[in-house]
Length: 165
Image 1 (tube, helix red, strand yellow):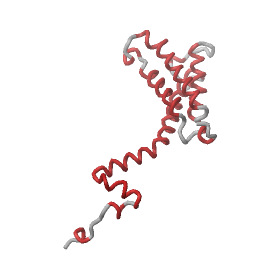
Image 2 (cartoon, rainbow, N blue to C red; image 1 turned 60 degrees about the vertical axis):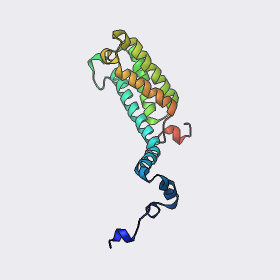
Image 3 (cartoon, one colour; image 1 turned 120 degrees about the horizontal axis):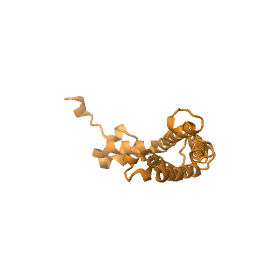
Image 4 (cartoon, one colour; image 1 turned 180 degrees about the horizontal axis):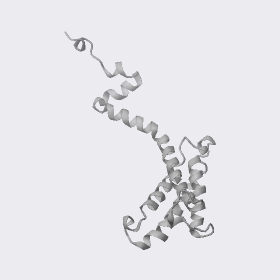
């Protein structure tokens, strides 16, 4: 007689009592349930990572416009008091605030509006399709920031540390 035939192993033996009662009814979906619970537990942290990387990408545009790093020929002669200069200040300050997670909701809302204005003023007149008019990135930033303005900063932020979120 084999060992597995003499010692039947149930989910109750593998999982804790509370978890076993939850999983016994759906033994075929055990892996899916565990995966969903794991993903749900990590969702707030993923929101923080999303916010940080969105801030890093936006601050890069502001730095390029205002301090010339990274150097981009299109940003070579931008005047600080021009419309593009003002966008650079919004992106530089807003990107830094997003990275820190400080005042995330209002900052993200302002950045979302700035990206919408950028799309409709610069890209939309060039054509209807974002892939053709070069506005794909502006649209992505707009909706990423709009999402952050509703979802908040996540647990890894100054807002969460100050219980502002």
